[in-house]
Length: 484
Image (cartoon, rainbow, N blue to C red):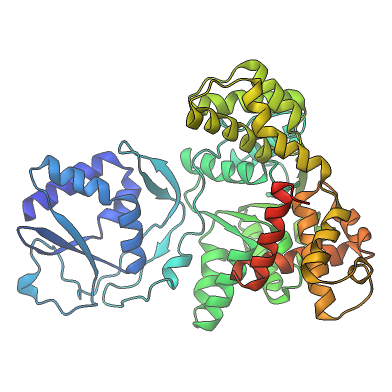
């Protein structure tokens, strides 16, 4: 079995990138084996999770190719006292004091088995094997978020609405000297900010410009900082972002509103990165000057870069997006159907793609040809509701749900029974209408900054999946179903 294990590793090494092999396969140790299965040792629980998600099928396939049908189990090194005589085929015992520098994954690439394996984004010092980690602690912050496979420059459809943003992003990714090294992508949700920001990371890694790319949201950054403070690892956090990062991609910058400690730390981090000539990409729905409760120190650094806005795509661009997406899906959609979808769904790219997926899915499920009639049946509810949904309608629905009057919701009252429904209404207005945030604020007789703050508060609260989440979900379903 020891020989089979080495052969399996050798074959897997051929299937995945070398850096992925070094990160996830090389650290594994054969701890024990029987006729029915093997036990592999890993550095921590997070490792086990990643291996099971991305490599378990590959392991099983390779063992089958070698004539073995085995059950594979995993165990964190050092969690169980295993005698040396029972560790078969392992080159080093689990308590051997040797630190392992490995590189956590930050984006996924499809493999030939239909799964996905992670490719390297950032360097990270793993803990010594004998220091067992608790599930969900350090490991959860090792590599930020995964870059989406399809979010590359090649897959981005450029139009008049996004030409400047695309060119600026590509220029930054290619390492050209075009200013401070900071890019701020501005635009509404669903227009392609995330696509372009992640495309920068993909390009720099694929072309070996840098493999130390950090992709996180402002919320991730905040949570990681809080975690580090609580666990007395703040110096490691600072070292990670200030000295071990070549490219920082930070999304949803508006989330930092009011988070003064995080803002201060981020401003200092940006100084370190800029002094070292590193690249920084921000994305947000608001200009830095329009984000409330943002300190001047951070605001000045966000504003010193190139700000590029992505707008809603025009008809021709929407049509090209649909053509590219149908090609990606591998299905045939008549031109007239694409034209109909492009004509009807004009708010954002996400809505456009959702409409196309709905049409294709219904055709496949119902065994029907994709034609105008089918497209209309899918899009009618979307377009009908979109045209009917207004801020006033949302006020009415929220007031009914929370048993308050419309006069209350636009009043100056600071009572919680009034403030919370008002915040919910602003959140839903931003989600379901195309009105700018300033307009939403004025509709409730509130300042622009108050509207942004309200949206951020509700976005945070609904993640807790409590009673408020259920109420908002109930209202959302009524809106989406057109049951006004």
